[in-house]
Length: 444
Image 1 (cartoon, rainbow, N blue to C red):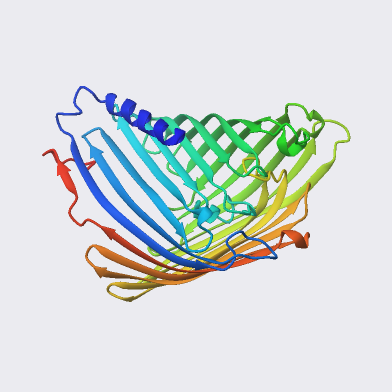
Image 2 (cartoon, helix red, strand yellow):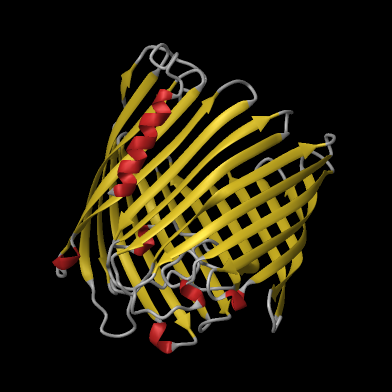
């Protein structure tokens, strides 16, 4: 609960910032909620053999708080989750989910932003999933993991689209499973957007990362457990043909310098060209193509080359939505339980939703990622799900769904598949408790 206590301290500090007028024009909204999830899962430990199935109930009361003034807004949400396993009750635990989103506007040009998201869960798939960011997600077992990501930044606007941002990012991963390392990374970042005219603009960025691992004494030192420093600098030139269409070209340079295994230090160059286009008021697309090359800093200076590719389509229909995406590139997955190292990947995402009636919606979606590793066996992770959501009452919602997860690996011992059927009931107060009398632009 250390991370949650940290969030509370941050909130206290944030509330002191606008002290001169905070209580003069503040409006506070508090909304209680309750989620109850009932699910059946046929492979709770994500094992290839000797799989275990169970019926799981998670009861999650929660609260959402919104406090706003003329110059600030604070959003807080917190939900503990009491999980109960029918057969394997040694997995019974309390999950936690907390979020913070805050801004304070000193004047029309300067704004402070703070965001924090904290999770504690024994079900790793409860963490945010994304085909590009999530990596392999091959964690097995039901030991608890803590995940926290916090970002604080200050924006300075000096034009309609011109902005300078200076910030700091911190990510944390803590595992109760001794098979996986605890990890932490943090560092400052800066971004600069400047438009020379309505058509031409540039974007510059810099990021520093310091990554550390809490490695067990009996575990040998490898590239996968060595602390590191990372730098990334990027530049982008943008040209706007019209309000609907713009193109860009970009270049990025990244480095990884390890504390003790310095022979593995490397740098990566990226160069790419892309386009963003609004096809209509309801449809948009983007596409990017480019090239990257990676080199070791020391001999033998091995070189790894590949191409960059990405495309996406988003569309809103009269009674539904469609989202498609594909991406090919590289990352290194250094803040994960089983560190992947330099990885070339393909990722795919798709989701479609359809409104069946005024209060009922059906959805289907999936994501898949194929990883080409340098340090371990290649793998493909896939997830898919279908479901239906309905508003039963003004304050009560229901979702019934089926999820499938699968890992395909060059090492057959790592493979697994898992199926889950779930029913989610969500209740949320339609009339939040309100304090204060002022209504202003930061109110909902």
